[in-house]
Image 1: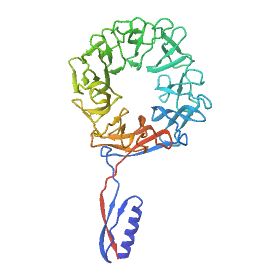
Image 2: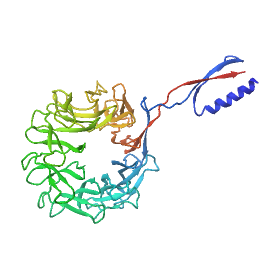
Image 3: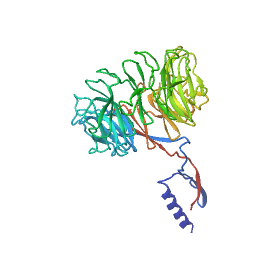
Image 4: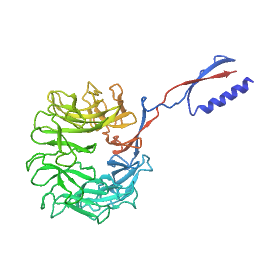
Length: 498
């Protein structure tokens, strides 16, 4: 009987061995009962100390030179990017995070010449939801043209008749806006209705061969395009367009001077209004808002103490818009009204100037990079987090000059960013929003003088894509996947030895 039980238990535990890590306590003598402790895997939410796997997806260019992926952009769960190989040059590639699913979409400039794809933007107007538009060139001696793709070689085609040097693609409804050159009109605003021959010059804003476009981030404001432009008479000011000559006009002459800069761009749309950094030469660079009309374009609040200043909008979090001001250097919040604008944090009088790579919502607040220069200690690149009431510096390496050199991204309940320290160089780090909960993810390149220099951190379908150089393969595409962490529990089985 004992032999049968023993045989059964042996077979049972052997079946568990490939799945569970086992620790067996052997018996000291015959007919003695001992217990075996078996460690098993259980599931826990990602919030509890998540573990990750980090790996290069594909060695596109074998050897140490690398494929130099760039311009990472996602559509419907697929990552698109520009990458190089010797046979095709820089072309459009795609990846689903697997080696077999990482391949060139199309050789737009046939042979080793480069098409240099860039400026990708999703466009569902006259296309399906998988289509996107981008800039590429078919000849090394010509300028980029506007192309579209559905992610297949057959579906990657030139989207419209050639124009000279198009750039800054922006979609508003069913219209694709862009800026392009013309020998008669200079660089101006153009539009396209989704067909090959459906492009038109919207308006010659700066009459004659002079150019008007200076915008950095045009945005959709309702059914119109909001952008900055120079008309030769009013300086750089905010403009709107509905795609027609009559519907394209300057919103407001914020700084009345032909050589002035009244609108600095950095548009963020919130609650039907666009917020931006404006300068009327009375209060310096301050936070402004516009609804696209002259009367609806006003300064929200004056937060700076001198004219030569600026503000930078971080984003909207928990129903408030947050922005940085300088002189004095402070973090501000607003509900869009002057009375509802309040200071969140004062960075101190030693800050000479400051800016941010970007901010992300995190832990019922947000985290952001803060960089600039201090009179006493020089330049800095730091990671800060705020709950909307105050802000704290995540001083991850107090005895060192850590440098956070990328905008943070969030995957699950974890913050990821590129940080440089002395022992590792510039590598990928993670944080739970506390100093104690911040750590190096992986020392991808062991050379402490360089590091792997992670760039283009992009979250797609619960995975983090980025580019890195491990010192062996050159710069290639990498993937971080958060794994369900392991925790231990014990089951005890009577192990009978006879």
